[in-house]
Amino acid sequence: MLQNEHVRPYSEKIQPDYRNRLREWLQPSLMGRFSEDEQKLHRSAALAYADPRRPSIWSLYQMLRAMLDHDGDLTGIALNCPSYEYFRRLVRTLPADYVDHMRYGRGIGRWDIVHDAGQSIDDIATAGAPTAPQS
Image (cartoon, rainbow, N blue to C red):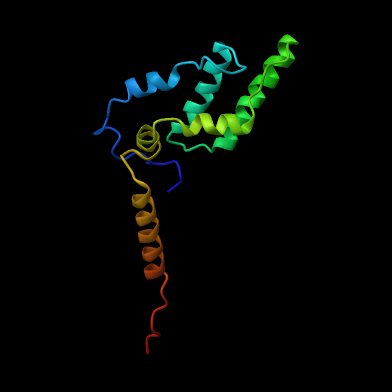
């Protein structure tokens, strides 16, 4: 199975309402050097972190930079690009249970992830154990 196949087996059954918390998260900051439109673009790129294909923060940041560079080349206007640290902090402020639900399909805690990984290691070790030679 590819990494991205069937990553959300329970998504059809569980659809919690995250609208209010996301609405709060999407509110532009009154402080900072970015305009409201720029903040909206940054938040759109950050929200893509919750995609079931599980993009990394770094890959989303590179995508955002490429979009801003391309747009700047087309218009001739230099656009403000956030630092990686700013963008990473923005992604980390997303509601964690929403991100877990969207990326993994169910409410998952950190211990569940570690437990599942440990179970996978046990399964692999058991399946790959050498068998006694048959006489």
